[in-house]
Image (cartoon, rainbow, N blue to C red; front, top):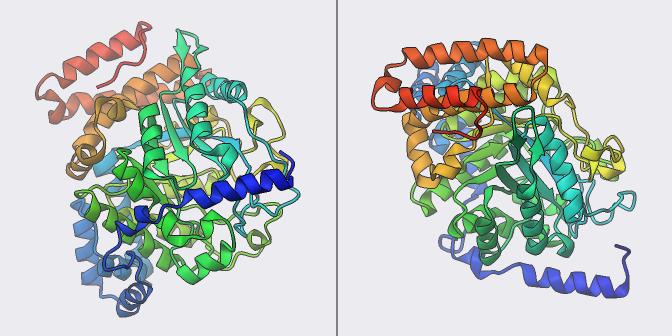
Length: 503
């Protein structure tokens, strides 16, 4: 869409209508938001050189799947002893197993539009990046992209949009419907996307209700940085320059009925310890406002190079691989009930190291160019928001997970059975959700192996399924009630060609 005086005026008018101040002020306490920089700095300063016994007591609280308080998380962040960090890595892995078992969920991103009114200094989509090739997929193009992904066996997508009148709620709703409309042939029937998550700009409550009605899964908005002076500096103009409008995006989503929300920070913009604390405070305030319900997921991407975004080429606060492992570990211990998302920004070798300390979701076969799944220039930097570190196929990633002893889950059962919001939080905190997830991971993996796997991946996957079924058969939990007979029945029916059976 070429810029003209008329389109500029239309865009300006749209921008002026987006922010609704009353939908921020209602969540404030005494006129203040939940990020108190002095308080966070005080916690970090007061926690220097923590005692080993103190850290071990905090670890025990995490192992009981209790969310940590700020002073406890700050103490973990200030650990310097390498031996203590090893204990924390091990504990984080154990927390993950207690809550989520040994499954890992896969998904794919689908970038629908890169038009944007914002000028984020680290992003290739920023308004003033004249080298960026702007494009918005039409519904048929969305379907074609989805056909490729469903044809690989994906069941979850996250659809991604820039902030612009061309990708407002009408377009988001239309593109989600297009994704859900797709069915593709498989070896044993048809495949489709069963859950569409959304990564989009903050929306008002009435618009979020529309997305809830169309059937979105998680609504994901990253604050990018919780440090207010840094936020103002890296977001110089556009709607995104309003810190609090973005800060309370997830609150509005929860109020609109979208009870699965995803928080995140872009590590590298400011001090990593401060950002981890900001994510914890975000979880705490969601719990305060919504009856103990915190974020369903937390993401922790690192700042990657992006064309036309100079800041991304000179990261202000670089985060090395070892530090990223510490970030994942402290997040897992601090908010033990939440899913942690590791993306294909990171290279395969690092992803192998990070998954055991707490990661529960990751993408695979990722392309982030607009129209890239149909071969339209995925590697062209001027079509992408940033550069990827891992572009392996879904089959390759699943095979590696199987070799690591992990089962890939394509489950979307919880969302369709109503295990969301308060219900899933209670189940996660008691470890019961992991039991349902284990059954559904086996069922959905059985389906994927039969419908999509190549021979090498199928062989690796059969080993994992055999191990998982043995654990299920020997777990007393599944011998109470009808769970085990139901699982056996569904498994046999899937092997005979039925599809989409879940507990």
